[in-house]
Image (cartoon, one colour):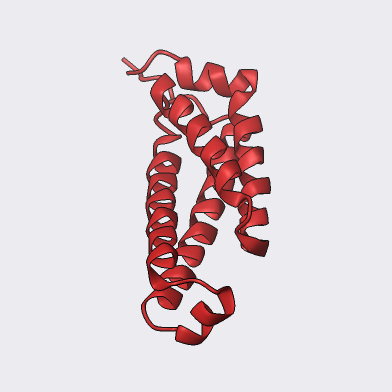
Length: 133
């Protein structure tokens, strides 16, 4: 009795996973910058003409978004329709999050759009909706 090898992750899903990890890392960097500015860099706050509250809130949003990205990307290998749908939602949120957040935000916007496109393709849909063991 031999077991068949597990199906191989399609290249587009592998690419989406890699880009998702990259977006999560960039967003984690954005969170660190925002939280550092909010919790002690008064000069940066004056430059931004903001109080600490909104900057800290933005840092927390970035942190939660990055954590969700790491969690979703880790689940790409297992599959499941819910993972794909969550990935599409996460990517769409990244597009929105990328607007108005500077140069790093533009990277998040472009990479998130790439994740959405890759996950929307037919071979990605087939991977995520295949029968699970």
